[in-house]
Amino acid sequence: MALPDVGGESEDGEEELDYRFTLANERTFLAWVRTALGLLAGGVAVHTLVQPLRLAGLGGIIAVSCLVMSFAVALGAFRHWQRIDVAMRTGRPLPGTVLVPVLSVGVAVVAALACLAVLLS
Image 1 (cartoon, one colour):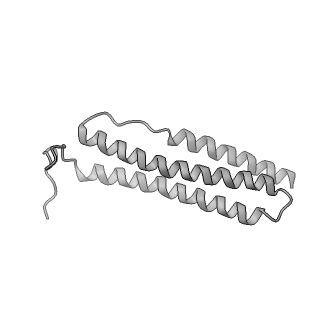
Image 2 (cartoon, helix red, strand yellow):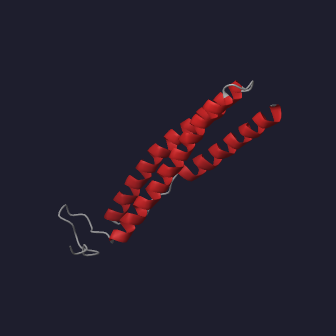
Image 3 (cartoon, rainbow, N blue to C red):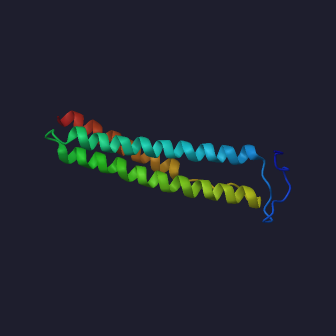
């Protein structure tokens, strides 16, 4: 099987990309999905392990924060992958992402809540 002609056009009229760029975009998407899965697992673990303690309310807030971030990152990852793919195929500049600041602020909030929970226990 021959590799696609870089810079040529595909059957639907879009520019054929170097396969390495599409694979790099896919790897980035998969990294975001792994992050979302980690947040999902963290949220479930906090809910399961913290519930018996007297700080169950704070544990619930931490768990829900992780689960909401997991949901947001998973949806944002798909949307980002899709936007990058379209931009590459149409020759437009690559769009930015809001995933990085959302994830950074979200993890900082969860870390602060976890510190508070540890100090109060």
